[in-house]
Image (cartoon, rainbow, N blue to C red; front, side, top):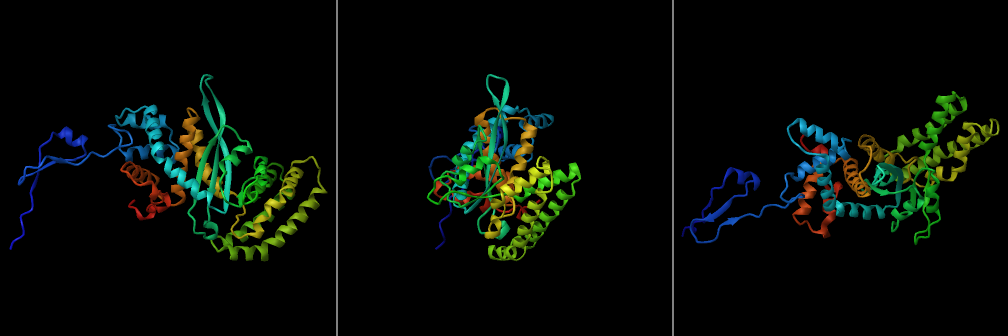
Length: 395
């Protein structure tokens, strides 16, 4: 017995204009039955009934927050191609994307809240002050987790948050609900309150940065040709040479190397600092740099007791540098909401880069998935570290 014939579908003719607008979603009707005309639902978009695809919006976002091309420059580039788009339109597209991408940033924060060790830093964020025609100084605070130095299992993440000031109260606010123990930061005294905050896990343990200390002596050596400053730079270089040998090794291997080699170097360096301080003018810049080291010695030497800790805060500084470049080109955010959107989009672009992910492809596909109804209970599947790596994509 032969199988019943399958219904044949034919497409109804539509105008070329309609085909372009509907992205080739044709209408169909069955020749063998009297069923109704069938047409797939048109897909939703970030800009309902608007011109841009999600890929176009992703390109605009990455051009500004990844490639440091502000909206007005992008508008000029499009104009040379005969496309009239003003910067307000591009900003509107990005703002609409932020609404849909907010769950991504929220989940990134939850991931950071589970990390044992975090990095933190801040940089200025000029924001237009309405009514005055001037800018006011806000700040982007960066919170990062990067365990690649000791081959940890957690993905690298960086999250930017906007605040109108630099007070340590904002750092405490942004870390509220976090369960980590160690905070790697510079010696800015705004972080000191975190070492006294009342938490179930106890106060944060501050781990200070050798790179910041080294820069002081590099600057002093360059400006004054001081042999003491040059010697300090060489001493610190020995610590970095040891770290380079064990980078990527397990925490136990790193800790063993530090106890065998770095511990003695650090003890000798402290004695040397104290000796030099007694021999130079107490009012000199060099004396100030040495006192900076000795005053923060406990935080500088905490890396000797835990193989997960890094010698410096370079992971968060490297992540925050693109924000500074974007700020330099864009000059300022139009308002505080714009600054918050800036922080959100910069977080996603930077985290993509840390995970070797193409940010334009990631944002475009993630926007489509969210608009198509991806369940919030499976938001983890949309994280940048779950996306395909750039190296696996055609160039």
